[in-house]
Image 1 (cartoon, helix red, strand yellow):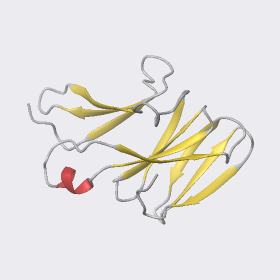
Image 2 (image 1 turned 90 degrees about the vertical axis):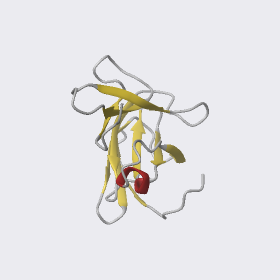
Image 3 (image 1 turned 60 degrees about the horizontal axis):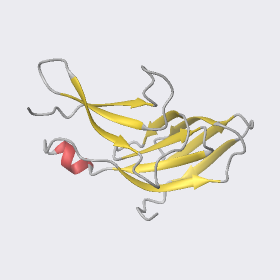
Length: 136
């Protein structure tokens, strides 16, 4: 079974109800079947409440998720592995942003300029600049 390069991210297992994790799904090829290839949120770095949204950076090798737990989490992968046809490249937790919102974070968007914005129920919009580092 060879996985196609195309990835679909299902946030919070939205087809089945609220969830604390994001799952990466990959197309198996001609069969139109999708399989879960990774669940984001290993112990001590996943969200602890409902994940509401995500956004990818322009190059597609990072994404940010937002949650009811008042955090934003940045995830990264090796896009070179995906582009070379090497199959699925796993996502890893890069950092957690906390203390910027006082209520549920419902929205996040990563701009082409490397800035991402979050919007929350506290009526605040916060802007973050990607420093391109992978340190936690």
